[in-house]
Length: 63
Image 1: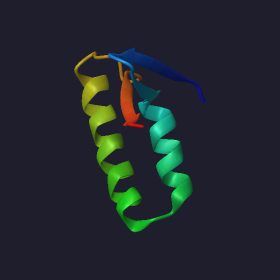
Image 2: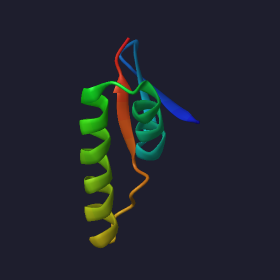
Image 3: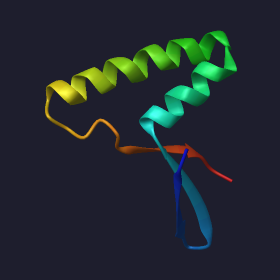
């Protein structure tokens, strides 16, 4: 797993790829994470159909 860290006005913002986010959510096993994984996979399919980059980075969390 790789991430990108961006610093804006001394605030660190971490980003991970959508596929890494899906893996993390699947590993948690929590019910809401399963819902999130389903929605992320649907979005990934739509992006692929629209010829967008399906591995775009997404915000993982704020410090």
